[in-house]
Length: 251
Image 1 (spheres, helix red, strand yellow):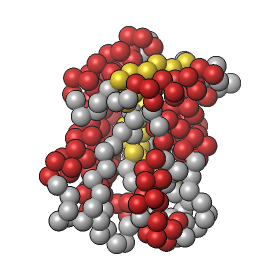
Image 2 (cartoon, one colour):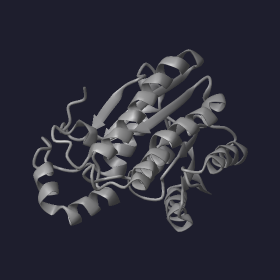
Image 3 (cartoon, one colour):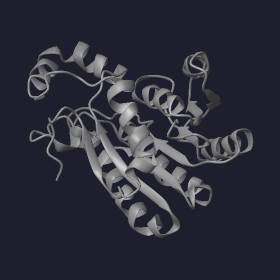
């Protein structure tokens, strides 16, 4: 039996990469998935992939920096799919660069698309998640780097998400809502960009991964998220879990 049968999930940034992998894996376990993102064509591709496998999915165009769009996404999900049991906050604009080089608007976009969107969407979803809800927020191993040069702003927004995760885990557990964070290292478009733009740095980093490979968005990241959202992990709450082949040490 599929472990997420009769569950409804909303995944942000699900038109590509890690978000797409998570959406595919949740659907494979029986969840109906609201696939959200800014680009309709990418969302349609994810939805088509789910439908081809016999799953249920709905494309919802949403810019996570827009509070009204977030509210509409939750409303549409509940109306069209019949409820909401799983929330995955994956969408994130990435403010990479040295502190002197990151512009205020780039840092603000990282903040608005990351911690603020996570904060807003968790609160919007909260009433629907009561009873058997599961929230998975995406942090990053980048915040665990011993050398944070060039990653200060990105690490800052991702660490803020981890703190929001811990707060929700403590405040909402009594209502039947579990909240956890994952820190994935995956073969996403962002990883492809990094490898292309900073090949020497990327190669040196991959060499530090004990398993000597980068995770697959669906098989390594998505399938773990599906397990985390299932009854198999019913006592897991408030954790930050690195999905990175053993590279990061979570403190």
